[in-house]
Image (cartoon, rainbow, N blue to C red; front, side, top):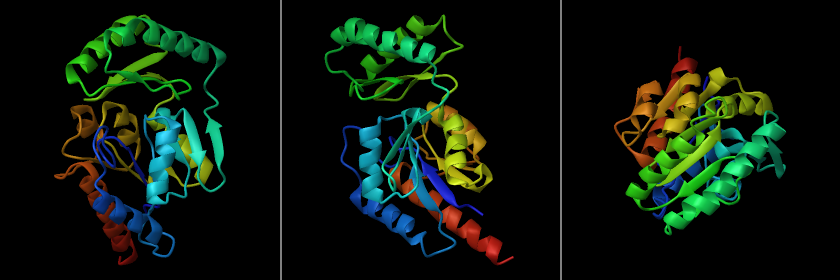
Length: 252
């Protein structure tokens, strides 16, 4: 039985530089709230590469009650208890490396791209956001070159609007395992929706995983199901799939 639906944010529930689809958001919220009384409806939570404040805000839109993951699994926030947790696998060496990388990014990279912002509230992940796609690719290549000597420590991901440098051993796959440990819900009882290359570890791990039609090829290759809808509608379709699957188990 699917007890928990975990969704990425950007490209799924929300979009940078665009207003939310509030009608679809309301439907997702209704599904999530109905999970308290309807055994067939899984609860909803979030797993995003975005920083804590943004993830918490979207969790409030959707009335999420389970722990949410941010910075691709570096941090966890529990809306019910107001507890903020950090992954235990972040060592002082890792923290120091990313602190120095963030300093280099602010001093060397940002002056070249004035329409770019660094996600300054992040603890580990070095994230850059810009509406300029060509700048994103240039910064992505800069980050690849800068970190090429530490493949044991760093992964570099990009979307149309962002570049993210994350700790190799703290990704959305390890985040799902942490979420399982915190909630007592087995990974075999989870579903996942994601559209980015950084979603691939979670899409591979979750037994029920969905990529929207607008997803990156890495996400589509990792997902068990590629949907024919995109963005927020894909999350609604994944929710419908999970509910129908749970109903089918009860009707056997």
